[in-house]
Image (tube, rainbow, N blue to C red; front, side):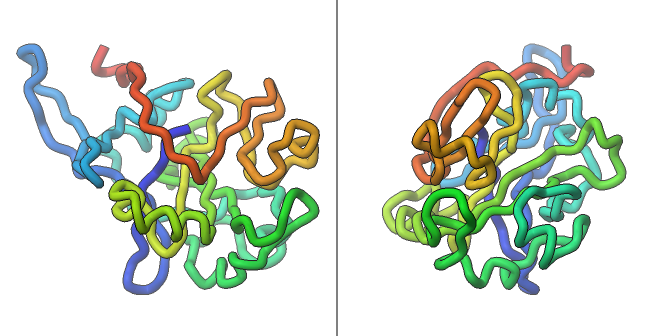
Length: 216
């Protein structure tokens, strides 16, 4: 699942980086693209153009969005439903116990997750971009020796678009009890076809993104 680079503002609110739009000529046509160099890698809006997401308003390079992560309605994490309110911006202080947090799934202290929305204010619910954010010591440790993680994560926070690349289902990190049966209690697990993703082992992988409708 594609990673969303992280920024934390001066007040401690967490946001996902989205490149500034610019116009480019491609095969004789002028199109608007959103891309930037992060950690020696070209990060682009094309990362999120799969499973129908390419039609979502928030993936449009020209979309007027503030990029902050906001807590998602109906999240299954008990801490999220009890301690924060849906629609509020994610704040670093909400994850102060990330080094010890745990639930009944897997080990405690692996990382504290939340389900959030991204670039989805004032859009139809069918176009909500759901992301998963995790704060973990594993991210902090790996960032010491990885240029990409140094520039795409902050204070142990890492995020990804929460849509399975296998069959477009909705996976979860430490959120599905059945993950234990497949050795995925401490990993991102998708129950539809038992797909497993390790959020702490970032893999550089290329794929052909689908174009936005107006670019066909």
